[in-house]
Length: 313
Image (tube, rainbow, N blue to C red; front, top):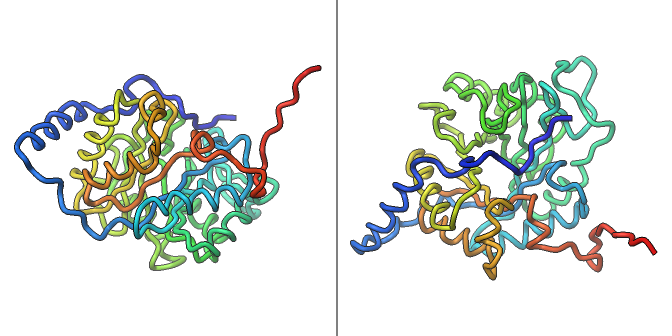
């Protein structure tokens, strides 16, 4: 079974703009230029979760609680989640629930629904949830239709998302570019279920994003493998500037970057605060599931499942 992993090729995260961004940042400090004034676009902070990013799943209560704890670190933020309900499988995608008969053969499903319990908790806790797909070659309009027929009744759902790295691709460093026509058609399908829905497009490269389509779209950067926090902030600032005034979001906390964020007392907040200061059109901040249990250890006293390691006598 093909799956997306955290590990990427060298240079996966840091674009050629990173060095330029650092230079500009230092020049701004020297000249006494103040950070850009924040807008009212920032809405939420929380978690990313996928079946492969949580092999030792602590349970729905853990995810619901952790996203709420992350949001509490940022005044005014609502708990937010990128919840991957459609993961890459072969040339297509596998839903986190049984799919109805007659669905496109590139869209398969699991034998039982593994997302419904946590989505119910997200409803109760006032979450903003984005249902994400890793489509492969599956038709994205139908993917959105199937997932929203299943989960669109949840009040926590604010939109859908596409990881463009897996758009007509099995290579996490690739993904076919999204045209304006594609983006508009995908969003139109989502909005046929609810006119208020929005869509995010996620990648670490700007050149795969639609050149002009902006209405209803959030642009998410999931870059990693940075030498330092400064390099990350410089690249994220360039991402935000490139898509402004459209809203942007960021995934961070990858283990490939842990050598420099690991020593921080509160990496979720420290990095998040720097992103918000550098990127005024930030709408959401997301800590990834690959390392979330390092920062927020599961607590059996709160009902979390904890993997038990059995030692040989």
